[in-house]
Length: 87
Image (cartoon, rainbow, N blue to C red; front, side):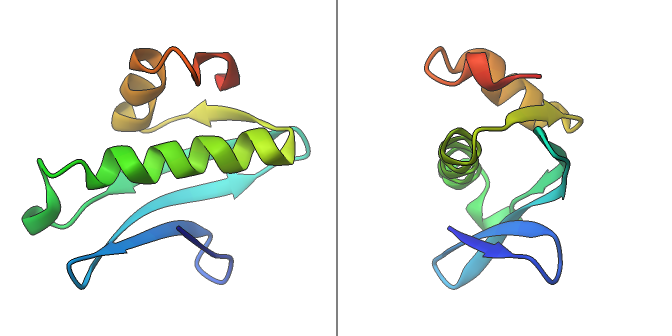
């Protein structure tokens, strides 16, 4: 995963295509506004791998996640190992 700070998004490239999670940073939180995967990557687990990397980054940074995006919210709620990161 790559943190593209210029565009305020985390990016994961697979099969030459890039999935991303738009974010805003706060002092104690990471707001995930939108998660996008190109149609060719949908159903392959790419978005889930991206969210896992985002969650690991949030944990390493000591921040919690505010999932505005429905996909991010659902992924976090389905993931027992990362549920504690939900703000």
